[in-house]
Image 1 (cartoon, one colour):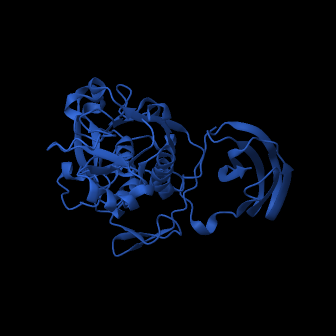
Image 2 (cartoon, rainbow, N blue to C red):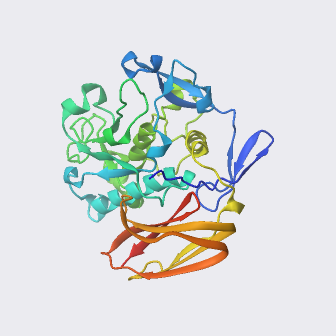
Image 3 (cartoon, rainbow, N blue to C red):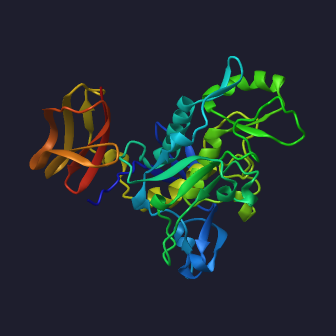
Length: 370
């Protein structure tokens, strides 16, 4: 099924700048169309020939014989599949100052996924693919040159096509002794030991600094940075964009600093390379679709709108990975106006999606079943 994502990017041109308006993550965002962003491109359309890191204003700026080494937009959104078996376990640096837990990792992963994908209204769309992620304590896998690096993103591009396939990519979080996840703080050496901290525990950091000399790196910042690499973005300083110190893709790790969201520069880059490659529909032209109650224990009331004429309508229920579980309505013709479809479902507790197809356009609504 070729799903068309409807990107609610309501923008207008004002003094050579795009101003994006949205009640969520794009609110008040101002993007300069002449601002370039650092990405990797393949030499002679073949990754085996190596790659260059260049600054481009848009994908149309990348000319043959180079292809941008970024994800195909049809692969979005990309879920983060974290292997919790690699997690060394929750810990505290002193009671009761907890700084790392499985619960905190889950919250950070959700935050990373939503902050990038909400820019193209994809945060509530079933994932098309996923990348494997986890802690790694194998020095050979991490590689000696990554010994003092918080994490690495391994991207896989089929030859000679240089478009990255997320399903073959991974993010490895450094858990070797060179960059320690869980250092024994009684060893106060001159070496720059680091340990990760979850966003939810940053409030404990000031007290920890008073007790110990350990440096803390935000797990959320690290994961978000590597997720940006999976999407094809490189360090802005690699393209001599040295003024982008607040960019999530800047190579300086967030050490002993409070976490912040994506910079406007990061947001504009993602939207330029991904949102405009998807179907764009003005906000005023999107039909109203509402699914209630949400959360639900079984009853679903689906209200949908036909803006004009007569259109075929189909409604499908999907799981979180996008697999169609059942078809509730199939190509039924409806006239212009507001319509209601009511049904009962029996599902296990979890997250699901209602896909409503009106004409040739598919709309997604996320629901929670209790």
